[in-house]
Amino acid sequence: MKLTPAEWKLMHAAWKAHPATARGIADRLPGENKWAYTTIKTMLTRLVTKGALAERKEGNTSLYEPLISRRKARAIALQALASDAFDGTFGALMHFMVAQEKISPAERRRLKELLDGGRNKGGTKR
Image (cartoon, rainbow, N blue to C red; front, side, top):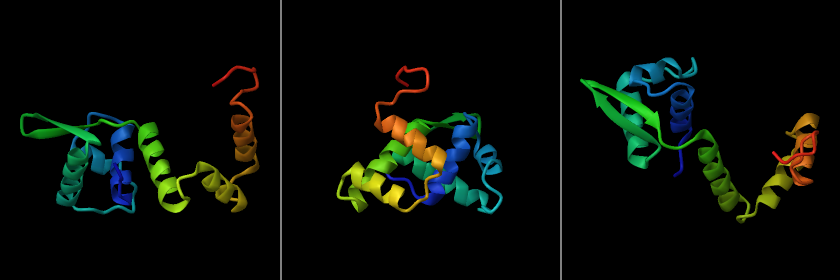
């Protein structure tokens, strides 16, 4: 399931608190998003069709709940990026990210820990 940038924004809002109404999700969107209520409803319907959200009715009100975790959605997006832009290899993606120097020194240390076996300071696997 590939999410558009707009759908990601809606999913982030839905993950914050759920179940949620369309109005509740709209209220949690970043300030720069001034979408009409009907636009939000249309996008939520698309997310239901994609299987990212569940919709149930309580009277005349639709309540939306994520069917996919944030972690799973990120994994799918990362796999798609690796597949589309890096010939399907995570190594090439990681190399690109490190070479672009968009990783802070703390993130580099944590990445090295993960690559060295995923051990935290206590010596146990995470």
